[in-house]
Image 1 (cartoon, rainbow, N blue to C red):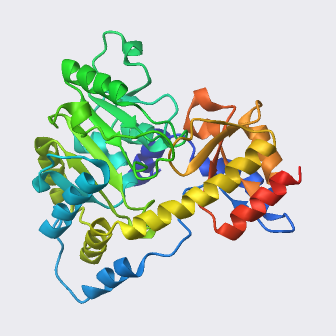
Image 2 (cartoon, rainbow, N blue to C red):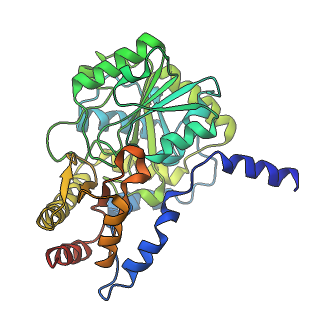
Length: 373
């Protein structure tokens, strides 16, 4: 075996199987349904990108030079203003905003960008987006799943991931919970990385950022908030996200990314600036998801499912009180594809994650099939 092949093998051996590869048979069964598949397994937007954003993208398509890793001043100011306007997040300096080539890339690389390694502990939620664990494993760090930080005992983590609203559960963490996480992290010298990609899709209650003054008392030290435009602005194909928070940490990330050539393309930066500056398109998209959620939620309840959490986000965290793989098969027989709960950790084997990201026609088809059974 050549050295380069050996290296590739060592890297891939660190990682779990790619989750979606494990549901190929269920996908094939769902696709064989006479009415076609209703794919509710992934959170991929299906609605068109708003013309305002497309116009901004094309308006700078002729610019030939390299973009800056830090992003344009206009983009960073637009991000700061959107965080304040939409979520009440104040006190963010534009210098402490850094665009990313999609938030999955940022999350997967964050432990390495922060210089973590084998001696460091990364804490992730018990039921969690798989990329938190993947990023820690790629850095060679240790991983602990814990929702209650007292579970860690005397151990001092280097990095704590928070995800509220949660993917996959839609659970929203309250101000008091987040304050405890911040206090715990500061006592032990840990960084808190808060994945807030679904903050703009809250259906009941109130979701707050880790940078909210109620949570951190206006002090962003040791805190990073990760935001995506994939969900509320339909920019998944654009790979458009950013991180904001502690200016010192953001500066450290910036230096690493500059040396690595990790730059968001200039037309994408222009599109992000337009998207962050306009709330109307975001509100329209949120209402589309609200309507789809209501249809799908009612159909699932009528079909005997229980829906847990799901106060926010693009998913209904659902169970029939059986192993999630059995539920996956039950849905596939009806032409509906979901994501089994075991994708997200050993504590979620009885659930499936059912996404709202399908057209109105496909959501209606799923509801009809559920109501027929």
